[in-house]
Amino acid sequence: MNTANTMNTKPRRSGALFTLLIIVLGFVMAVPFFWMILSSFKSEAELLITPPRIFPVAVRFDNYAQVIYDMSFLLFYRNTIFITVLRTVAQTIFCSMSAFAFAKMRFPGRDAIFMVLLAVLMVPSQMIMVPNYMIMRELHTIDTLLGVALPGMFSAFGMFLLRQFYLSLPNELMEAGRIDGCSFFTIFSRIYFPLTKSAIMSLVIFTVMYSWNELLWPLIISSSDKTRVLSVGIALLQGQNHVYYSQIMAGSVMATIPVIVLFVTLQKYFIAGVASTGIKG
Amino acid sequence: MLSKRSFFGRESVQAFFLIAPNSLGLILFYIVPIITSIVLAFFQWDGLSAPTWAGLGNFVQLTKDRLFINSFVNTLTYTVVVVPLLTVLVVLLGVLLSRDFTKFDKYFRTLFFLPLMTIPVVAALTWKWLLNQEYGLLNGILKAVGLHTIPWLSNPHYILSSIAIIGLWLGIAYNLIVIIAGIKGIPASYYEAAQLDGASPIHCFFGITVPLLTPSIFFVVVTQLIACFQLFDPAFVILGSDPPGTLKNAANTIVMSIYENGFTYFKMGYSSAQAFVLFIVILIITAIQFWGQKKWVNYD
Figure (cartoon, rainbow over the protein chains, first blue to last red):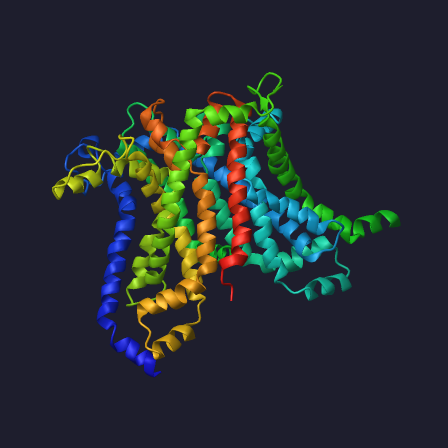
């Protein structure tokens, strides 16, 4: 009690200084973010003023309109959403099923199979690009949305994350279900799965962010705008004629908005997920 | 009827059905490709005609390939600079942001997490604009305060440092979450006891925070070592469609080299050999992790 009091009285002034430090550093960190938004409203001429002016003359949406109507931006958007949803749904279902089986059921070779699948996590994803490209060629899925989505529909990380969660759930639920004569699939889908909401939310936000951010694999597998995702589409915008930074920034802002919405709504699950993977290593 | 029912009723059979989708997907799109990639490293292949056995030829060629050696040295330099800087920054910021000094702190903390919500490609493009030599904000500020402007992205001496700035900016937020979670896990009673003994904040930082934070710090260092070796997005965006030249040599990375050899020059075997080198590097880091964890991480 006493220490708490002395702690509160003495550092009040230094507390304000620390808050000031947080504000200053925070704004320094946020400069690129704000600069992206400000630049997206500027005209070509305004971009080329030296020294640069901070605020645009007016809030104009020309750049946004140009990106939407003159470039395949809405197509990139649709592709990204399609691939992200497909991967998220697939990972949620597939990873949950296998996590439940690995955590709660007994079958021959369980631990060995789990370790082999987990070993995938040690391998850099760039190593499998060439072979996967060849597999997609055999499956005739090059330059298709399914081809972009496929490898990311399965996950060793998701399986591991959810298994840790299933391990923390009581085994008694399993016994109760067996006594009632339920199949293991029913026990999984009716009893355990609904209890894993918070872990699923962590997985969902990880999958969405990974899918939304991914560059290398879509860059390889897509060869036309009809299958390109936002990150590839925006990266390739910069090489085109008559595309100005203000337009690239407008596209960037639009690509970023869904991530912000997602992050703000699911923030606590993301932080819980990062924190748990961080501590368990 | 009865036997069929008992077959599908068996625990192991149902378990195999449950693990099947994810396991088969991981086998087809991860495990088979990993093995194929290792095998391909010993072949010469353009992706179309039949692969021809090359033995260690690809690896011998790697040791003489100036471009690959360059990309390896660049990636190593980037890693050696970014990982320690990022770790120190994140620990200091973590201490600063893990408690409320005043009631306003929580509103401004969000600013530190904005990079997390930015697509790496978008971040790199934004930085490319910020660092533009003539019209960029950063050089504008330098000029305004009477300093020389810096050719951030157009000079081979600066380009890798500029990419490192982008990498740091992108990496801080995620690792900050790990560190803050670690700091919040330290019991407050330790600090109270230390304060009773008259320990200064600096003593508390080095005597309590850092030792008890070693698991989190270790996690950050290991994951960042691995992530830095896989550097691609910012370098790809910054270099754009730059033709080969001194600028490209100064900022090429291992993964860019793997990508170019595989999908620009269609040297699939050679590309796989480079991927194998990356794999070995990451394997060594992982091995050090297992060994080091026991050695100096304090899990108590």
